[in-house]
Length: 425
Ligand SMILES: Nc1ncnc2c1ncn2[C@@H]1O[C@H](COP(=O)(O)OP(=O)(O)OP(=O)(O)O)[C@@H](O)[C@H]1O
Ligand SMILES: [Mg+2]
Image 1 (tube, rainbow, N blue to C red):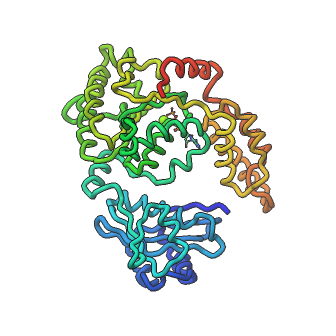
Image 2: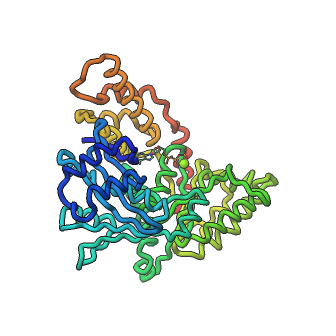
Image 3: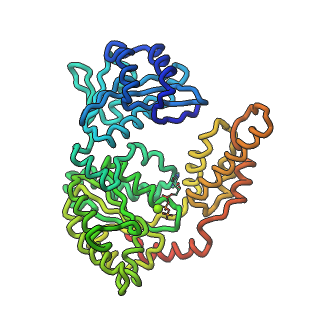
């Protein structure tokens, strides 16, 4: 059964209290009265909702850099569907971004949550079944991160990135593993990467990959938008310098620069344009940035061929990785992830995969949304309650036929050439 997790609103109080009352376990740790006081006082809380009904809730009591999970409750009808871990993930994301560094969860007795907590990185304190999770940020770092517009992302983005097994495998082995096991990598003489470039046509998932890498490493994610760089005291180069000076305060961080060709292309970057100074500044920044083993710079571009080759050279960027349109297996996984959002189980995924050759994930997302919308509108206008709710195979095929592909055959040919000329894995 599908459900969504969202922040708690005041109007959820009654159903949440009812849920806490009927859910057994944990009653002796935080009483219902304490939970109500916390909810009324604006404590961080999230709910899982299925068809407008609250089917799960989680709330915490936060003070300074420490938070206690007070309850994670799920109705008996939604057990075993991953609701508790989805609630906990959402709640944690909120807490971390509010400056919480340690999250504790005191269980009154051994129960099913234990396994899920261990998987989510909590450590069990034997004597008291006292569970604690140390988050990556100190309160000072949380302030810097928020000034940079950065975030600690939810921990499940890597799993949510559907398909793309080849790209995932390469990034996992070359980037994530050496960064998350530096001693083991060093024993083999493997140096962890400090900077990588992701290139490929629009909508293939470069930004999604960058976010997923940060999520996988549990490092904060900071995105720099070249077009939005401004400084009170100087030009763009100064703004970039100031931004990286702030980034220096973060012990661990993934810095993402999208559309890097705006500041490092052959014509603009190394010519006489205003971007020239920014390019030089970035070239100065990269060696200093590379001094730290717990930082990664990820640059993304749609047009790797316009980047200056001096910018791309090995001493600056360790890998130059193509992210192309998904192959059939990857498309199947991506279609599956969108189709499974409706409650219909008879969609012929294989037919959708065949019809959507060279579609990017973004194109698939768009077609999938159009099909879902068409099915929704049909039910609304017919007024009948339909037995099989959700878009049918025909709806999807129609939506695919109506969707304009982002990547043309010429683009695919260009990408092949780019991979030969610039790819470095
Ligand atoms: N593997 C995937 N599974 C599911 N959805 C995906 C996947 N990859 C990308 N998407 C979705 O496709 C859309 C486009 O992805 P994204 O923004 O990462 O592409 P991009 O390569 O950064 O595009 P651009 O070059 O335009 O910046 C997003 O909405 C993203 O959620
Ligand atoms: Mg992008």
